[in-house]
Image (spheres, helix red, strand yellow):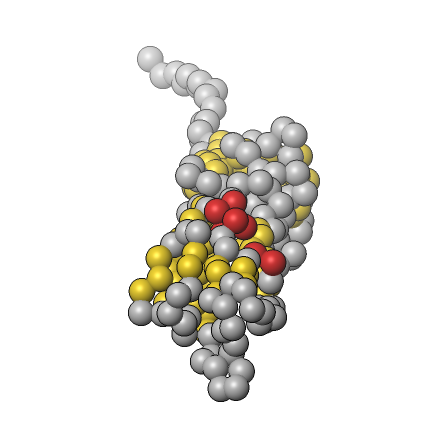
Length: 242
């Protein structure tokens, strides 16, 4: 018996995302000069789908970056940044050129900020996680003028803090001055001090800013640095928690 039969069937090709995505951890120093610090996550992203069904580098809102926290005043050069929502969105092309800038004096402290970068197309997504560490740097300002006093027929008290100002300019409040070290050499016999030690004519003092403010050196009667007089030379160093 001759005969024929036929069957209609379809072929389904399962789609699969064609996304390449890499990024780098970042470690930079805090900026204290008023410009803020800029950094890139080193994002290299590409949509490699030949038929164009997944979009391309210019397709908007393809990349989403979610982060733990960044300070107010943070900016990006491209894309849409929402600091309150801790998100950035943009195209692949924008992500590849993305640069972040945080305000001066900002540091991440002891914990880095986590960033999760996701590229999403109609056929899937890829995610890469990286961290950003912004290390604190010192923001100490020392202004020192010549220490002057007038010889008398009595001991002369000199307070170095009247001539030297030590301060910190870290606007984010994370930094404070822990200690100040002050030395003064060439002191005559009989010099006294209310803090620190004097050995072989050299005063060495280390203390808190409040203790430095209270430091007083008492020079003996009739001492002068002129005719001929010794030269008194000093150094000062401040140390902060950063």
